Image 1: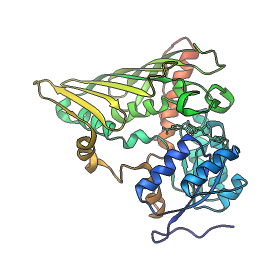
Image 2 (image 1 turned 60 degrees about the horizontal axis):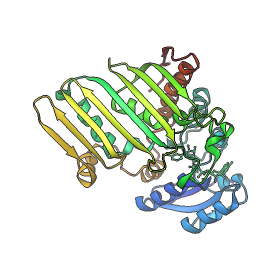
Image 3 (image 1 turned 30 degrees about the vertical axis):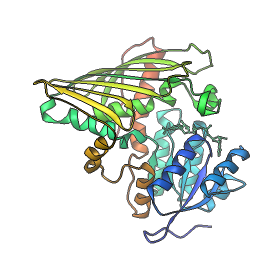
Image 4 (image 1 turned 120 degrees about the horizontal axis):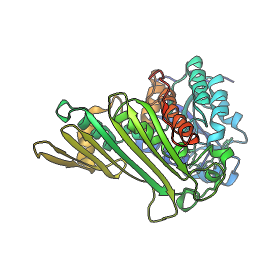
Amino acid sequence: MTPPAPTPSSPLRIGFLGAGLIATYHSKSLRHSGAPVERRGVYDPDTARAEAFAAASGHTVYATEDDVLEDCDAVYICTWTNEHPRLLAKAAAMGRHVFCEKPLAFTTAEAVAMAEAADAAGITHQVGLVLRRSPAYLWARHLVTAPEAGRVMAVVFRDDQFIPIQGHYASTWRADRNLVGAGTLLEHSIHDVDMLRFVVGDVVAVSANTANFHGHDGIEDVCTASLRFAGGATGTLTSVWHDNLARPSLRRVEIFGERRHVVIEGNDWFGPVAWIDHDGTAGSLEGDALVDAVTPMYDDEENPDGAFVRAVLEGRPATPDLWTAVEAHRIVDAMYASAAEGGAAVAVEVGQQ
Ligand SMILES: NC(=O)c1ccc[n+]([C@@H]2O[C@H](COP(=O)([O-])OP(=O)(O)OC[C@H]3O[C@@H](n4cnc5c(N)ncnc54)[C@H](O)[C@@H]3O)[C@@H](O)[C@H]2O)c1
């Protein structure tokens, strides 16, 4: 059964595949966005999770993924990573608009196939690289691309968290390479790679090393990489999954322009973002003041889920789309290739965006 195409005057019928942590985040975020949605099916092979999600969100537990896909206009793919390509292909073939979590897949080749399938189906697609809407990163980009900052010379990006198979994650699949694909670089720091592109620009070459302290097969828990950017800057990314439960996901980003220094720290969304210029002028923004400063910079809106729903209803592309994720996958793949060669320099394939 093919549902009628949604129009701006009718709510978008939403389904969920996967009812875990990130599905819950998106469901709450949809509510906060105020976007016009009709809650339809949710499917998760973990029935208890599906039922808890349904009770909290207003969705209905359906017996199969096909039931969910039949009865929606747009679907959230929030399963563990190995299921993303198969479910995206199915949803696209049925003409369902898709919000797919990151990483899209284990490899760039699979991610490209997903983006091509979505485009061929003519659906609106968005990926969960949510930091693209973070006020902190938008403001940092604004600061470092201003002419008075000069060219970006170097960037230091550090991201650490306790290995997310404990604590509030309440799941162990991130230790199973068949479900997650790899460790901290692919599963977590694909966000960081995307932000390095967003703030500093395209990456042309990388050199990386990985380590595996926990010993889960194929799940690196340390990645240190050096990056060369198209604009001439160089930078480093350090990504660590440790056992320090006092440190959930924490990032610190330091960007050195020729005449401006910028630091993002604290909260990924609300900063603070601090800067100091060659003449001693300094500033810092966080919280509501930071949000106010970047509000005019949004093409659409701060809330990723509200933006997705409204893009679908208005029949236009959403951002960031699957192609944005493909570019991050290219860099991640190059880093793994480098690590496999003991840290040799590896060129990043030039993509479409
Ligand atoms: N954008 C972000 O910041 C962010 C944050 C966390 C997780 N994620 C991504 O979201 C995805 C899910 O992560 P999570 O933390 O929610 O994991 P989770 O373990 O909390 O939930 C995943 C759920 O998917 C279910 N599932 C597995 N196969 C399924 C299938 N075929 N159909 C329906 N449900 C299925 C599992 O039973 C599980 O309940 C991962 O790809 C992860 O990388 C993104």
